[in-house]
Image 1 (cartoon, one colour):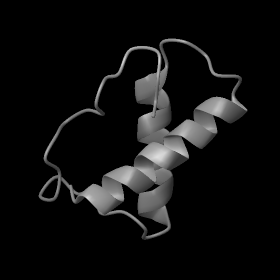
Image 2 (cartoon, helix red, strand yellow):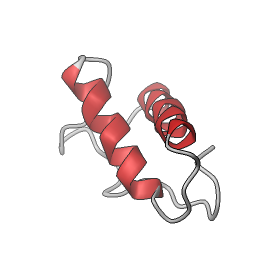
Image 3 (cartoon, helix red, strand yellow):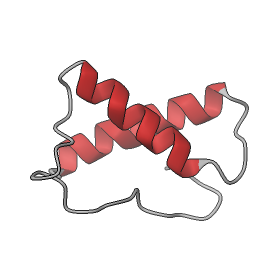
Length: 64
């Protein structure tokens, strides 16, 4: 996935996580929610052919 799309997903996932009260252990949930949301708006290509990774990068305790 190009870096710009990954950055958009990361930023939106952080916003969603922050709005939810910054719950621990739900990073993947917010990542995939952001990914889906951006894909539906046409702002990110999350097709399997474009994906470099199968899961969001794991950074313990942080989404940014």
